[in-house]
Length: 507
Image (tube, rainbow, N blue to C red):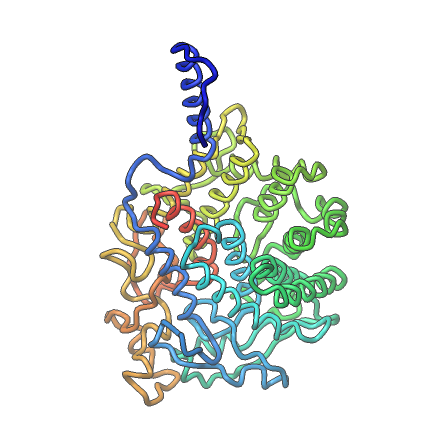
């Protein structure tokens, strides 16, 4: 745009130039997430590519011709037969061969949220991310094909864990477990509704027919979740516990599911549902751990967007609820509760801690985006926390994960010069079908599981459970707490890495 100065006065021109400089300085501060002043120590784009590729290594079902993780083969091709329903497809959640619907749905929601917030920056990785989402939603549509019924698990976890075998070889029972009116599961049902609703937003422009199918199913599934209330781990306790017990109850999922349906449909009925039920569903509880079990924090951040950006005044309180979460994280503020390792890693619990690092990092960059757009900050008892501070905290967590830590170890397989060699993952640890075509029996694999040999198949992009509270990591295959990857660890990382790759001009 050409600038025309009305006066030839040098002073006037100088004042105008100063104003322009000040304005541009303000704008660069307001949108500082686009350019960081220094060169990145990490290749976030490479990490992003790998974080999405990982999902191909977790695929169940008939693998497509464009499968990039080529050491894997098709598996679970008769899944669902035990109940005369097609349940072929979906993802194995972690290092075993069970399909758990609860974490799979959460994984789908977080992949979708990553694309909704940052997909416009993903460039060539957007299509790969969408394919990762669709692999899940195609399965979730199968699992919800019958009204008031969801098939929530394929495989008997106890029997599966008694074997160490490749998914292509598995001969353990492919038992099918479901929830229905008599055995309700509001937690897994509402999370499934959230997954379908969020994915409908992802596909709204690129595949409107599919998007409409997803949102129609999401509404039906949410109505089932709300009408027939109960935790799925009550009726299915011996099959889903202790693996994916619903420890936090189902109220958080009902709030989270309603939040996603509100976003996806803009139907006032869902906003009304949130207004009427928010408090009883725990909107203002001080639980600050966000993951596959507890969605309260995610719901607060998501609903704060409707207030901050869409000016939905009735959701005003969710900005305060979201701020409380932020204040609990930031060291040195009056309300800080979070624990960090000596090396600076957020530490929530010893079992698969990195899932909370990735989910928290995603929430930080996402909330920073909302705050920046609304020109708002967070006030923690008089300490002002800017969006930039949130991004700095998130970057530090992701950088630790990628190798800026006392061990100089990348906790993403295949990224950087040093990464875990013996991850707790059956398919990765055993010879591939191409190298060893004959069957490896149930117990025969344990000699490899207990060995010190590195995994022969590189599960590129897999993020493991991570170090302990003292930054130690033994890299032992049997140590599932620290060495097992999971889909729900990677899903929110996709969004955080996209933001970082973009902000350092790597995309």
